[in-house]
Image (tube, rainbow, N blue to C red; front, side, top):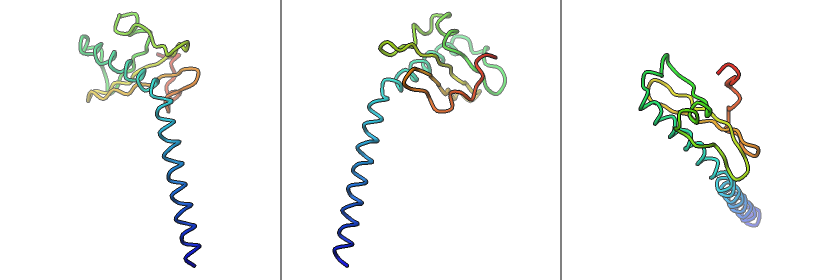
Length: 117
C-alpha cells in the first residue's frame, strides 16, 4: 500500500513539474506577442488622451491602421511577421488589445467583424 501511495506522489510531482515547465515555456514563447498587445494598447491610450471625444457609446473600437495613420503607432510587427490588431475601449477606461500574427492570435480576436470597422 505504501508503494502505491509513493508511486502516486511521485507521478503527481512529475506531472506538476512538467505542466509548470510547459506553462513557463509557452509564456516565454509568446512574450514578444504580449509586448505587441501592450504596444497597441498604449497607442490607443495615448490616442484617446488626445481625442477623448472619439469614445462614444459604451465601447469603441480602434484598429491598428487608424493608430498608424494618426502617428500613434509606427508598426505592428514581430521579426518578419506583420500583424494586425485593434483595441476595444470601454467608457470606464478599460482597454483590451487584440492582435493577429502568423504564429499567434489573441483569444477572441475573431469575435469582431473588422470589415465593418
